[in-house]
Length: 87
Image 1: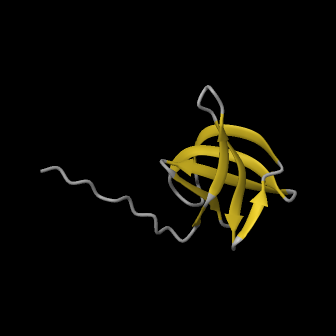
Image 2 (image 1 turned 90 degrees about the vertical axis):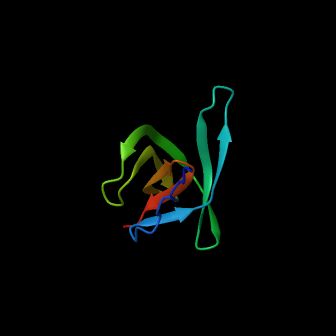
């Protein structure tokens, strides 16, 4: 029998979050807002989208370089989990 291990998501430098996103007809994902400490934060703008590794937190996925309330933030989509880097 094949058994699959659940990936470990316990890196203290990763802050997993809920994200609201839109999907276009080509399948592109665009995050619109994210949750932080029970507050929904709207993403002001996205300036870059690319496959990248998170050097601070570990892991790899799609990195969205965003501005949230005027602060540059790296938001990652890794597999089916969203996280941002904790400074």
